[in-house]
Image (cartoon, rainbow, N blue to C red; front, side):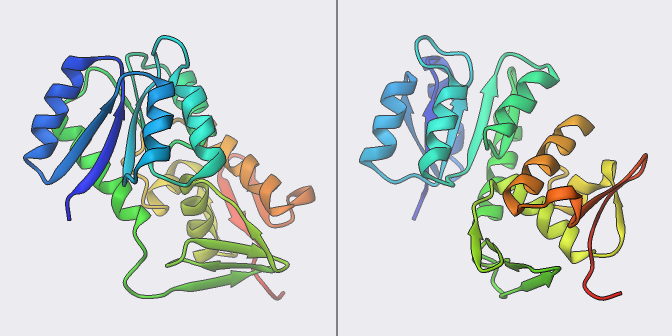
Length: 226
């Protein structure tokens, strides 16, 4: 079965280029020229991922991403002509799985899309992690604390898994994305800090008891026992 991707972008030429290139690589692309029609398409059919332009007339891509995340964990890659870190931070804060600045090569987009889709698939071998009252079912991509299900974005989940796998050991801030299997995600250290802050809030980590900041180095997840 072909992978189905929804492109929400007002650039028709971009759609034609990606439809041809991705189609040659087993990916069917459906086009929605604005945010409203993109959201309607998501309600009407099923897709494996969304390619979402930030700068569109009417409802912009950031608002579309916010609405997608309110209902779904569907993988989202943001596309934009803007290349500064602020846009990356905002998009990723809203739950986007990756970010690609225009102009980009279709080959790079394909590589990033495949990486996002791999992360969204359940692992072939079940893995369960637990430390300090936080339990993770890696294959199901579920996190619980105190029996409560915690809703995380894709990037937040991957960062948490990396931290818990190395519970009790410090992971340098600049190495954390690589440990999380996100070395293909181009973000700055501030973005990592933002996602750690969100993780703490969602886990109810008051006083940073679970995720500790090692000043000037990185982060450490508390390990059970002494």
